[in-house]
Image (cartoon, rainbow over all chains, first blue to last red; front, top):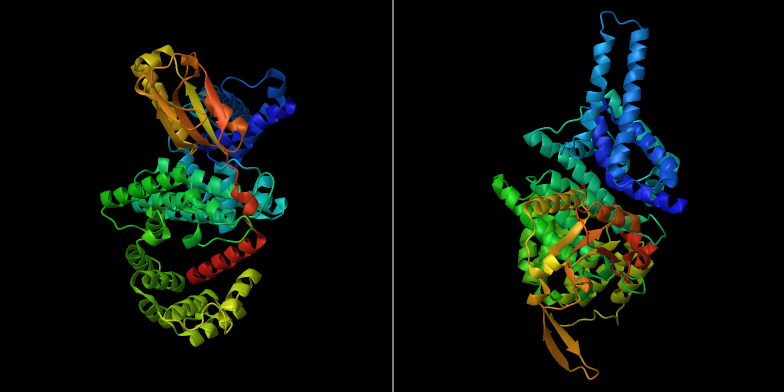
Length: 428
Length: 140
């Protein structure tokens, strides 16, 4: 029974902690202190609920418990101030104010959670610190859960959290939602953190309880929370759309044998239709928000639009490759990168034939960032093979096989590099 | 994990009695809370069974269509939510917050036989890690 109550406390904490810590930060003015007060309330719940039973409104119970601790804290600070003899203070009238200040906790303020996300992802913090603090303060995860998910020691995460809170205090970062372009700039840092967490989960290993796949779910959830809090921000909807659409393919992208399944070969009936629908709807919100702001789509929304082209195609053959190629061109302008350009080359080859794709790939041959990147010769070999230039194709596959560090991939590439392999000379 | 939260029908829902303004407001606030918490994937209310039908299959696969309404009100469904949560306890705590007076709500876990978590291999992870490292290298 006690163990069950512990699990209920965990669940309530996951549901309520962001709102609670947000409200406490607004009242006490310091996120570190706010989290301590909330944690005290959590400890009180763990002590009392096994005896008294779970209250009818557990969230309100936690708020009340945290409020009492906050009032104790105000009084203690007040006594200290009185003892250090600040002159001319009317202690009696100040004490009257305390319950008022604490009562502010009971009034939900819509922006509390948004402010908390913004402070957890503040640019004064390192990327690792932002990730840890966001999952801890906004996600309501315990330090050991975060550590397990990121495969680092618990003490490392604990240190990151402590240092991050100290850095926020030292920088006197205000608990606020900036307006206009400032908000968009601060949100960019939040989106980066959420997508990082999502990708960490997207490359998941097997495991028992809180493992990396859950990071995908948590990043998605936090993205949805953020989108609900900032409905006018196109890129927030764009990132949510991108994550929903990528997550919709999670169970189709790995074969039972454990081998990755390429998009073309995925069983599309295994795509998660609920997430596809949500992703397409989120993309539409991104487009509407951009239009309302008189702005073009940002990089997340464009990537979501590419993912949506795949999601809309009932079969791989129905894929709208000209549209995907055009979107990669837009993405390349927003976020110039040889990797984006290589993707564009593949899309162009699918839309307009291998010769058009090869032209783009050849222009990438001397880009330093792609030196040692096996997918470049692999893509080039593929296009050459489709053009019937078998000998050149085999040389590229051999080069790619020498570059990849993945055994399975190397076997596939070596087979294509062999003279009697599947890519012998054949007409285009 | 994903749960379907099933709201059972009542005499009123089967009669097509619309909720009062207050009930609607409370339900709206509850739905908003679910959305703001990022846990609600879907949720719909259903018309009374009088607008529905059942398709019966005999042992040879032949079908008969039976029009509603259906008598066993408490076994009927009036609406549902699909919630994405991290535990059974969490879905139950969410349901406990729902603004119902009277009636019953059933909670069922959605079957995800092919949990992707078991299928992803270290090789794939390595591949993804390298890909990400490469992409990050582009952005400095």
